[in-house]
Length: 209
Ligand SMILES: [Zn+2]
Image (cartoon, rainbow, N blue to C red):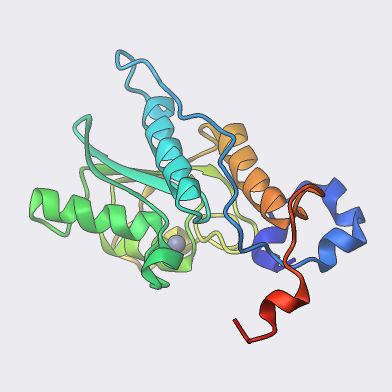
């Protein structure tokens, strides 16, 4: 298990030595979670985080680590994206980066002071930096990331004293749901195939296929 994944796994899983030694599966796992359908009448933090959660579901359905983000201005979603690092083979294709780019294009300004970004996991160093550079007015995240989170989890780029911008921060919105999604994704990716699923014999690879 890589440190990236370990921080989202419940402590009980660490007791399974075989599990720890297993390699992540390359097979696609069907997402067992349904999208949320929040009331349109109450457009609070939980509502917009639900939209980010739904984008995370989209990521899973495309076999990407399930993280989603939306950017909101005046109650309107102007950026909405999910992680697509694998599909695009682009290490910068995090949900937050893509949503920020969309939002800036939507308003024709790189300054996002009037915007709020919702993301299902605490942003990494790259995304936290981008949020400060974009002068995002407010950032709301669901699950803290003590390993790589840079808005208070591992460190806090938002606390740089000389920075010319600081984001208003809120955490823990829809935390349980977003944590379960991440944990389940890594857990299921590491499970062995069911016994009734035929596994390829070595003969299948005899010609180097
Ligand atoms: Zn990131």
